[in-house]
Length: 164
Image 1 (spheres, rainbow, N blue to C red):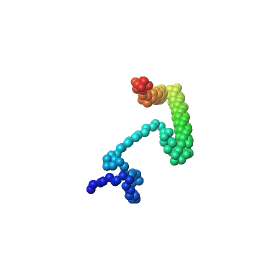
Image 2 (cartoon, helix red, strand yellow):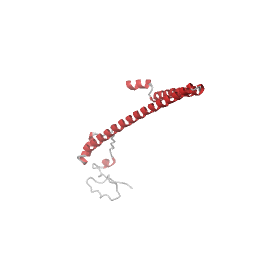
Image 3 (cartoon, rainbow, N blue to C red):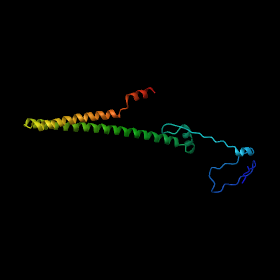
Image 4 (spheres, one colour):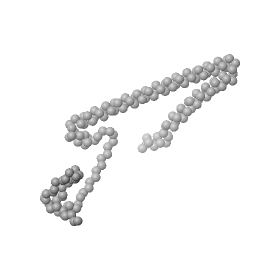
C-alpha cells in the first residue's frame, strides 16, 4: 500500500475519537517535506526543590497566584524541617545526658557496694564487684570512642574533598 503525500492545502479529515490527542497537520512543501522530519530533544536540569524561573512563569500563566503559593509552601516546609531537626538534636542531647546520669548512678552504687563488702570482710566479692564496675566503665568509654571513630570519614578523603 503506497502512501502519497497530501497536496498542499488539501483538507485533512477530522480525527476520530480513537486517534491520539497529539495530532499534526501534514507539512507543506512538496514530497520531500512529507518524509523529512526534525526531532529535537531538550533536557533541563535543575538542583533543589524549587522549580526554575521558566517553570514558575508557566505556572503563573495557568494561575497567577501559583508562584506565590509554591514559594510559601517551600518556606513553610523549610521552617518545619529546621524545627524538626532542632527537636531531634535536642532530644538526642537529652537522651545522652540522661544516659550519662544513669551511668554515674550505676557506677557509684557499684563502687559503694564494693566498698561496703570489702569493709565487711568480703574482700573477694567486693573486689570482684568493684573490678567489674570499673571494667564496665572502661568498656563503655572504649566502645563509644570506637563507634565515633567508625562514623568519621578517613582523614585522606577529608583532605581530598576539601581540595576538590
